[in-house]
Length: 273
Image (cartoon, rainbow, N blue to C red; front, side, top):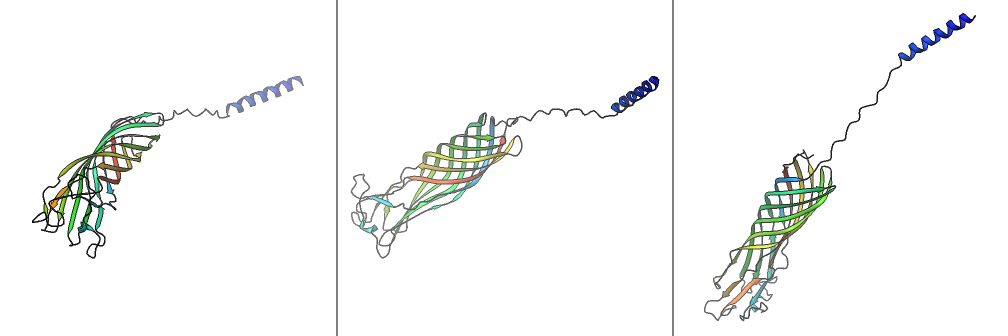
């Protein structure tokens, strides 16, 4: 009996060990290190293209008829009448904004700080037109064709997505022309090209398509302090005529301000990681 029990226990033990050998052993999955977050630090260059638009409502003409340097004189020729019920008309002609940029960004955690310069060809202009009781037209037109800015920007980075605010100085080349449709007026001085300084502020978003190439959308408001153009008018046979021996005339608005929305394509020289 003892021999039978010992044989039974031995057989069960062998069977248990054999069965255990057939149980699969699962090894833990290897730990994969997370990819490092993208770094916005580094130099970049890019191009931009968009549309600039503005308003010039409310711009009028003002006069210095007594030569005291103060433009506060009232001319009867520009009083509202049958031929000129509105007297003054003004408007802003929208246009394209295209150019290039260079910059550098520094990233500190989620925060990104940077500096950039850009130059743009801009095709926008504004005008103010005064209509005398004759009626006759007297028009100042300002045309902006070049704009450069130097800006700082700061924002928050969410890996490959950046949202930012920006602002800095702006410089534009403004050409001013004066035209009149009457030969009864003599223009004794005029204005040409004028370099105007001002500021620009705005913001934008940028997203990485690849570690080196990004696209973005940017909004800017630009305000240039343009020197007010002045011309001196006189009538034939002065001191006769509505302008006497000579009347200085200029627009009331000495600012050239507008909005810009543009797309941006950027190449970054850092590796992105």
